[in-house]
Length: 324
Image (cartoon, rainbow, N blue to C red; front, top):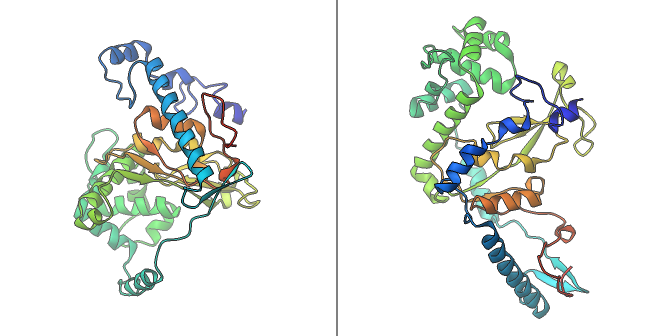
């Protein structure tokens, strides 16, 4: 039953998570209107047949060029042996001196209490004001209780234990803030506020212009009552765990699910001012479908793939003998 719910083979009337698949789609009338007005925002032309024909020609040309360069030994770090393309693994490009400098600078940082850090970041950015009341839309009046509620969510302590570790804040106040102010959309708005503050800082410009992004999943072992809600993935051990895909507002997913289905969510389900044009993932976030969807929305997908020889190039024409 659980697997069929997840795959949308069955649904629950009135449910937000397990509603019919058609309710997730744009109404056909809206789609038709937006298509006629050229407002779909896709990275391809409206004439699908013409676009496919162009892509086929570009793909065939690039594969032929790849085959020629592989035969001629003109690919850096890549060679062709017995018709098989062999890619030399990349090595880390961080100099040892940079690692030493990083360690030296890290030792200079003062030890800061997390609640004090949250308060200071709020004073810089005002991110806590995005946790609006579910009914009135007002910002939290008790910012300290709101920050304690955020910390309780982050550490999984709960209102009672967090109140016991706080001064001047009761479990009732923390519970009130979590009930009426802490929601997925308010977390998303607060995270966007902090991200925009990062992007506006002069130091961030040293790393780029904010048009690239990356994502990855992290596994956390489930304990106590949470163990009953976790799943087992023998790749990460036999104990129940949950996976958090970091760029999705810390959205938890089952560790048995592929990360690829969640990659695009991080680009579109966010409220920052960033205009992401290129996205990086590891092998877990890559699939043929994601490559295709990135092309449709006019963005570049650049995963770091392991076991590259197991991947196949999909060509519309007959593959050349020198490629496998």
